[in-house]
Image 1 (cartoon, rainbow, N blue to C red):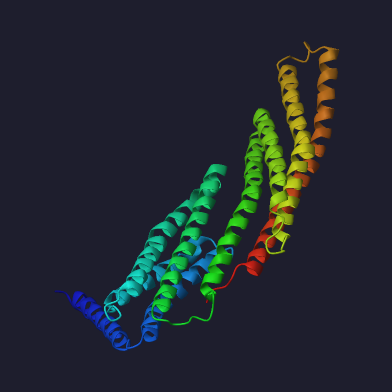
Image 2: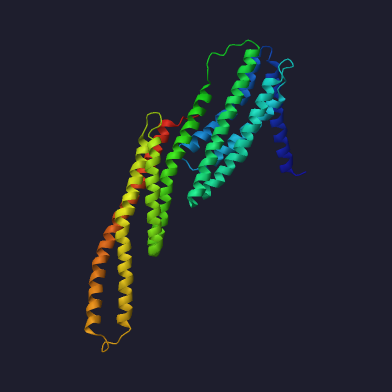
Length: 352
């Protein structure tokens, strides 16, 4: 056995000693049902703080990869909480609260070790298409709902144990339960609004690629799809006007969709028109250059000079239109990002 192996084994034994000692101390202090309930709550205290800190950080506009360390800390704390709960004895032969707590903690472990890890992976590809983003948002929503339901089930088991031993619980809802309910409702509302913004934003990126490649047919297809997404989104916002009286996110989304629609309807056709003129000019120039000076007719020269004049005027107009389009896009994204941050900071509960 190497020195490093002996050191690691020694550390594991020390950790195990304190885990067992901690559990035995709690097990001894359970002469009353209240004391037993407190011991169960204390075991879950750190894991709840850790996983709620992760939920809070990820909800406040932070990329999941950037807060991955918090998820790992949550998983480790949940695992330790499970061990400590399993080491507790049933209360005078009654294993109901202990078992419900074990079930809850195991569920949390699976949720944060598996489900949230899958969400982290999906985040990497979520912006590749509208379908990928919708799948990502749906998984987020379902996972949040499962966490809320697990908390409710755990709280019901806690209250059932209290009622069984005639213990009165004064608060009708726990602070954590209330916050988790807000998180669930807020995520559902945000995802619905964001989905409308993302569809138009994503389609505009496809439109930009088509413009870069000067593919007129692709440009027209993307332009029509962008108008369609914007109109659908504006209609959907009629039922998503505000969250707890805060209409800022819906308003920012509405402004974005109106701007995308206007961009597609007024600016993009000007750019398409330029590409058609450019294509026409290149064809005229190619034909003009293929002839020797002696073979060119007056009509050839006049047509070429006219095309050159139109092309020069078109370049200036195109540059102006392109600058306008880029300014509109930057304004849309900046307005959305700042509004999203302030909206989430104002409405998403903080867990410390």
